[in-house]
Image (cartoon, rainbow, N blue to C red; front, side, top):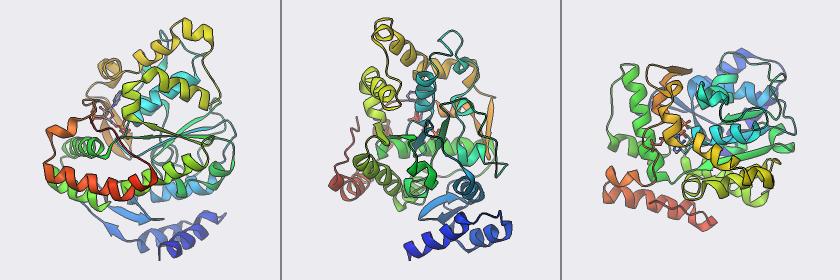
Length: 336
Ligand code: PAP
């Protein structure tokens, strides 16, 4: 059933013509859920995609042309995407900007490194991406199997950031509630959100499928997919950033290391620095199909905030999902 669904979708994706009617028919045929979180989700290629973004995803799959130097930042929502965007942007552009003139001072990381499926392909099935400075940086929440084939086949690199599901779940509850409040939508409880999360019916979920897709690929092709954990960044940001720089083919020189360039970048991209910037304060709204206040990307930025929210039975349930779906493949998380 799952494979059938994937292959009939592949026919649409593979079609050269931009056949809006066929796309609309496909979207209308997909299983749908309202869930409790935001807009409708549809089960497209075995992941729960916000229905309003499926056409964008298809356009991305059909028309995107990878270049060998491209860097794709992939994540599950609320796993540390904003942080990763700021860090990799700074690493890649360190010869163009230093800390005194970095665009991070005036722009939110999501404006600097837009999400392909919600921003670049948001209003245009064929955005002009050729003129972007190289190496081009892209971000996506799409699971690995659904990435455009050219990304998988080319030499471009993928950095995936992952976070322990206990904190990710709590973070996503706060984030989606902030959006609901901004839009005057009804609110929902942590318990309701938790249930949806554990059922996998959450943006780009089930979360275990999305995480494991990238994890397995990172084991099979470590030169292609770099698997980064939020908790490891927290513990040793300098060491992790060196690995990121090497992975993208731009290692820090001895001179840079001695000159404190790595520390400067990590300080610039720290939770406190970014959160306090005027560019990331309230009343600044980013539009990614949905309106989001920039400050809602910076809440607490800690490992272990779940202890303040989850009951022992909730923790047991999430732990057993991790034990069943992830541990057998060697993936474990630090949770405090
Ligand atoms: P997104 O997928 O919608 O872009 P994402 O950036 O992945 O969201 O997740 C936001 C989380 O990262 C928030 O976690 P919290 O709710 O537990 O606080 C946010 O605070 C945290 N975050 C954002 N920027 C940083 C940073 N520079 N350092 C550490 N954590 C950060």
